[in-house]
Image 1 (cartoon, rainbow, N blue to C red):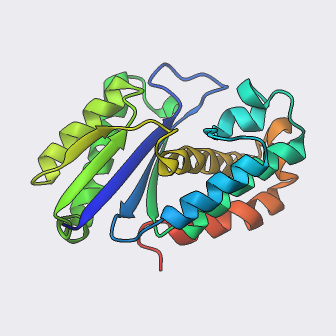
Image 2 (cartoon, rainbow, N blue to C red; image 1 turned 45 degrees about the vertical axis):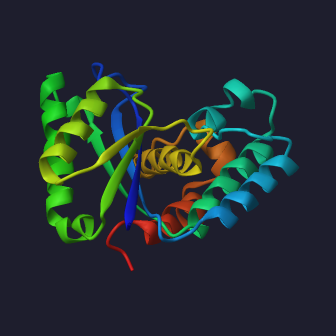
Image 3 (cartoon, helix red, strand yellow; image 1 turned 120 degrees about the horizontal axis):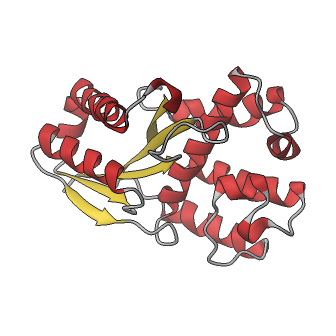
Length: 227
């Protein structure tokens, strides 16, 4: 069987607009399982072991803000972890699609949910030949936000003749960690446009030009539809 795995992660929440959390971002990592990435996973695991992070799940936003497991790490150590995850994603045969929403544009939770559902539905419809080329589509999500979980399942059930759902744990699926990173990079791209990079961002990525050159521009090569 030809199988497509779809790993989904989000950044933000469905609460009211707040200045410290202005965006809601959803990233989908698409992996045709006929392309084996086990060697890339093994290499990434070895690199994490060498850095003293055996079995670690890289969470990119806390990493940048020096929270949780990253409190005692220097900026260079945190950049190294981010870079290892980034180059792992670049080495894999995957593509992705990211959706960003300004929460300030939606005065009602249901309007945001409706817009997200329409965007996801349009993405699948516009690329229906691609999705229908697989015998099965498997959605991996950690059920972190029930609103997003409902949107994903409703749209997939409507647009695809069949799909499966697996609860994803970031520790078990490296591509789920990639989806997390993609949300963060999309957020950083938007912050550059608005000239709102924080001190924490700049400690890790140095400046806007370096962030664009080293991370944002290269990852665009993996965006769905790009050759």
